[in-house]
Image (cartoon, rainbow, N blue to C red; front, top):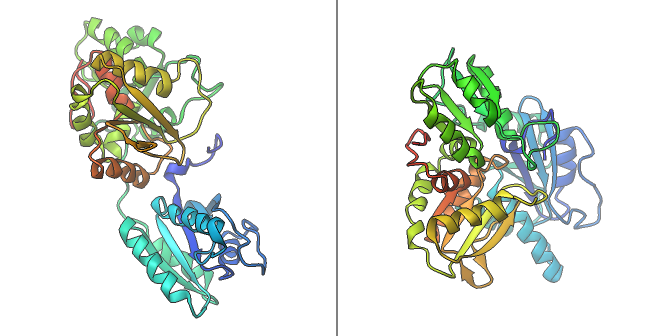
Length: 379
């Protein structure tokens, strides 16, 4: 996970280096980063697992650089596992660099590699031994998408607006800091020259008393019920309500799939499997949102006795053994790139598994109404 002053992994350009064993991938990674980020040796197969390095690289900005094992590793079952792990990196890489050492048998591996890249929509650059590293950086810089990715507050907040950020501080809150979605929201407000008022639920009444009707209120999904109760009791006019998780669904382009998934909850039956997935790994606490609150919300919404499978971090699966999930519930995905989030939701769509994210499920469980196309929740 990123440190307090680091760009989160979800906001970094991910560049992965591929090729055969001893093609010079690790040497290139070290030259590219200007550091000894990867171990270099004449022994084939020195890199056995993908090795990631997060850093700032001029002129590219914040990047994650990934060195991978050789795709020609033929050392039995272990070698096949290394190749599989290397190709899995393509799912999250923004740009794949093929390191061509001029080896005779590289072409057949390269064609297979290109096929994998096409299937995943990954951009490929070829680097030949002896090429300029600075020229490679310029090519990568030119490939960066000119248009900015969607932002959390697009179309919802403009210069001079005020928004209220309700941040519950409970046992699950990290000590001494805010969680990443809260930090990103506050930063966007600063970029927009908007004013962000931060409070806990207990102070929301007092903050509302000084705001105009229509002010945007953003909270943690777990606090939907309490926040909506305060808003309903407020006599100063209707406010707009949403959560960090719902905003992330809109930003990452999966809001409509989540709305559709929510409509399929009534089709669940006793004994159905629900796959609950989180994008990061963390220590589960007594009232953990994924393993405690989401199952409880589903029980309240469906009245069914459901079974659950759990995944976190890089692992994502709709299956438990041979059983396929009847529903997938995903976290807000603040630690995932938009590309990785879309990949996971596309897996759900292609498998015919309805999917919803934490925020929308908890909004429904809290007695709130629909989520519209602007990610606003009726209450």
